[in-house]
Length: 243
Length: 242
Image (cartoon, rainbow over all chains, first blue to last red; front, side):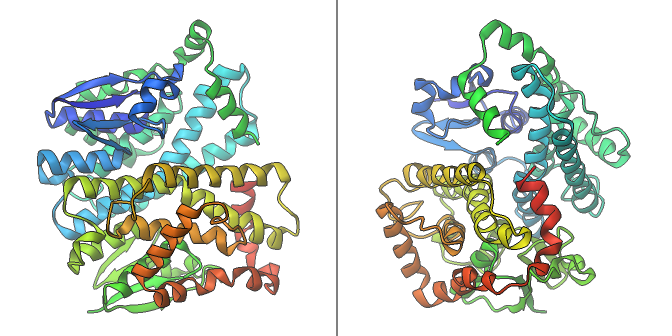
């Protein structure tokens, strides 16, 4: 039975899983879950995961959520090259440290900016209030600074040192999220830009661009909503964001 | 060269690291710090953890932040019993799955209770608006339901028959709102039974010792000088009231 990966490449964690599987030639069946249509709330997907999020891995009867866990599982199962998740105690700890920190920092703040710039206006028809937008961008800037100062500069070309690891992969897909809405986070950040170029080269420009094609076209969302309608869950989620 | 562990037991991730190290008889130099006093902003601590958070460890020259990373490091280095972080691929994946999910779920929602119920009223002298409080309680309840329905189900512990890092991280986070006066175990008999099991596995004495501070929090905040929380004001305003 082939490995199934439930993905929507609008989602950062889906991109890291997609890229990792592709780069390591891990065969899988690509199962699309259309988030903008609310497919994650459908009955069929509910049988796969009651948490209603992507990505999800289905390996025979074994179902696994959370991209970090999925990546670690694929590393273990397919014995991918050591640099992705080094066996060396301290190097691995550095990867784990970043993978832990990123959830409530780059991931949270990059996502928020993406929602505020790319999704909310498409749903509500109005821009997000300036004060809220500025606060969100400020938080993102703080996270990016910490990423550059603590996770990058001190150690080398990549987060752990000389070679790319899961840390760089997860970092790049998260950092690309706000970029999709037209916010060029690399401008004025030469160290971050240089790192991005290195990571893109290691991953391979073609597959990197393939993974990011959807997010780089996120200004197509208003048209999507006009064609397909706005799913209910989205309206409720947005309402809650402003409470 | 010894292992130094920097901890403030008001903080959930500090409690999990503390309990893990003690339970596994890992020798360490206990560096007690106070987050309320703002020690995390000192120049000294910045050399240990530039992220300015607790816990952090210093093992010889090697400094490490993030409780999940720290516990995985200690588990590997000190060859702790397998059940904490099983070598089995699927069991380990279950632990990793929980440890990943909890950051943006129980951890955030549980933490918010301490701030909303105790620290924000103390710091700003105002109650949190009802709608915000209700939403926060609703979020916590949703996370607890997911914990019970997906991560626990009818198993004694998250991964199965034995306690793991998943249960340890879960329990310290769930105890945080308890410290704020929110009885999360009311009407949740399965959760309560799991908590009792976890407390017994850890050892009641160690568990209670680790949670003494947070369970005394309501009392401590009553007599706290609001000025002590001055340095948290920007954080409060930005994260909770914008």
